[in-house]
Image (cartoon, rainbow, N blue to C red):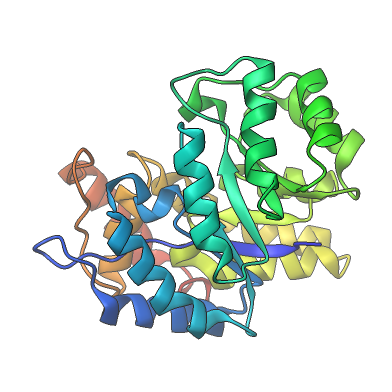
Length: 294
């Protein structure tokens, strides 16, 4: 089963907006040195909607050989077009990932029959699937009954990345499925709560910068040192919140740039963060425990 801290990897860009492979290699090396259990390639934090098909393949060609045998690998393939998602998944499976991450289709807001058929077509390729539930971005909130139907009719769904902020839904899902599948926290600011309800781990955007801290929080909890685990999280919490002062991954890329991992460049429609947020982030980074950061 998938487990531990997965970093939803950012895509470093040069000032002219091209992929910075030197910075990407630096980032991969730092993530592995921090002891992450896995990496998610081509997720939301990678700005995947702005990457061309050629660029996605280049990233996989570059990253997968450097990660294989060293950590678990998940590749994001989801879109709001089933045929495109199937094609993305077919391409991703040629890299032999541990799973593919497939978001519930956004904007279309599919009905239950369409949603089940969407995942069935992906599953037909033989892909182990992590279902990505993030109603705040997709506009689609899964009911408990529909999730149960999906898991029954699409047994290739081996995990759920949960990014809903509804505590009732989260608890209901955890009670029913944590331990039976890889129930993965998708909200960095709720990591301790997810560990307490038997989540298998986390897919974290903030871990791009704070991988050592997230690994420490996870390992301490698994060792039964829950008070120590929460103490680290509590100290890290203001930095986690700062990661989301503006739309992900804008603030994270600013932090990475300050740490020497490429530039703060993001692709439109994302733009440069406000000067007030830059000042706030810089002040937090200056006082942060250096062992928390890559």
